[in-house]
Image (cartoon, rainbow, N blue to C red; front, side, top):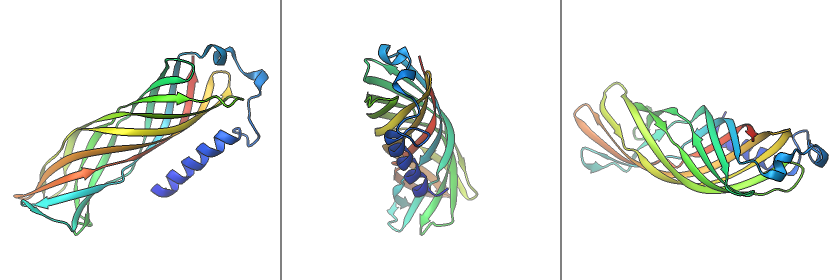
Length: 229
């Protein structure tokens, strides 16, 4: 699935779920079917989601100490499982911790197009402060803002390269999503985040040092199921 199509589908689904119930009518859960959990605003919500991590990469590259404006590096898209834990401070205000791990390839772009540079693993936990709306009938949109600290490890080198190292980095994120109650305490969720993340990378092409300042800036799109208690 192409990146733009994946984002567009998730955004359309998020908007559609906020307007209609999961069966296409105004809601699949009537007011009479709502459980006391809503009145008591149970404090915990645990979700499992399928996550698309879609970097929007931009780089400044230097080769052997000289700027290389025609050269660039790209980080590929990945689709992984994810766990997130939400704790409600009040009925509307919550903290969300997002946990996932993914492996990405680093490839050349511009004058380096077609060159495989290496790969790496990343754990990008996000801590989000959210405001949850309740528009009735089990439909709960939310917005959020927060921080990310990306832990990058196990860098591997493609043929011809050695010494790949990518620094950890802090990022800032914005978020929008919606939870739809489908039965009792179970919720269907669609979530879209935009994270701004900058990291420094270095490697060597043979004996020639290659350095890059990378704006990773991923879209992070998730669809999943949650349980509130």
